[in-house]
Structure formats: C-alpha cells, structure tokens
Length: 165
Image 1 (spheres, rainbow, N blue to C red):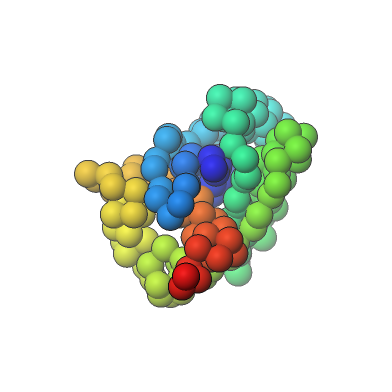
Image 2 (cartoon, one colour; image 1 turned 90 degrees about the vertical axis):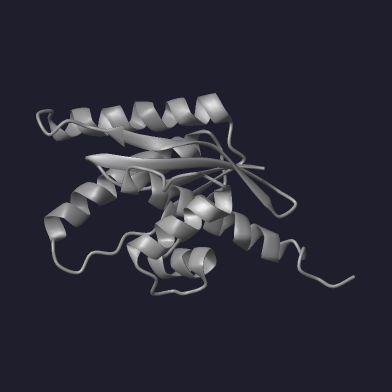
C-alpha cells in the first residue's frame, strides 16, 4: 500500500511517500514543496495545491496521513500553517483518498517507542526504518516520512499482523 505522509506548512510542506506491505516499509520518494515569501498568500496556497495534486497524480497513494497541528504561542503562524494544511487535505479529499491524522506524540511513539522523543531521535529512527544511508533532509521531509511510517505501523496493528498464529 502506498502512503503519502504530509508535514503541513505554508512556507515548506514536507512529504514522504512509502510503500508498506506485510510489515516492510520501502521509501518511494520524499521532499518538500516550498513557497516564496515574496509571493502573496493566495499564490502560496495555489503552489501547495498544485504540488500536492502533482504528488497524488504521480504516486497514486491509497491513503494520506497528516500531522495534526500544535501551536502554543504564535497564533498568526498557526493560521497560515492551518490554511496550508487545509489545502493539502482538500487535494486528498478531492482525490477521494482516505485521510488520517496523528498528533506529534503519536508519531514519535510509533516511530521511536517514545512519545517525547527529540528531533534527532526521530530522524535517526526514520533513517533506520526505511534503510537510508543518511538522515532524510530537509527536516520537513523527514517529519513527513515519520507521519507515513506512523500510519503504516497503525495499519499493521489494526490488521492483526501481530496476532500469534
């Protein structure tokens, strides 16, 4: 099953595409969709919309997983990131793909076994799980791969692959 993981943003939206089958996870692609601070906000949203639609078209994911937003201080940034996240969710909805959401703590727990893992622990485990030589860069792409891995682990648990037979 091909899963598209998204780390929402409006300046940088991270994505990770994996193939998860029978407990094995293979990376297909990862990266970021960037927008320019010189552009108007609607133009930036348009860039995100076109970029996410291109990913969906190119990789035909079966499901899309998003990181939930958490902001405690900067409300303005939260609003902009929320708009970028909404655009990405709209793309998945228009493609009639199932959408899933995970909190940062759920993602950290699924990837590292520790819901309070730091960024370095997360990146190291993402690298190990998908068998890369180096930590995926930029950070937003590594985070998106973590979202996709979290979803793959959640699906595996839900499908009874852990039952002793």
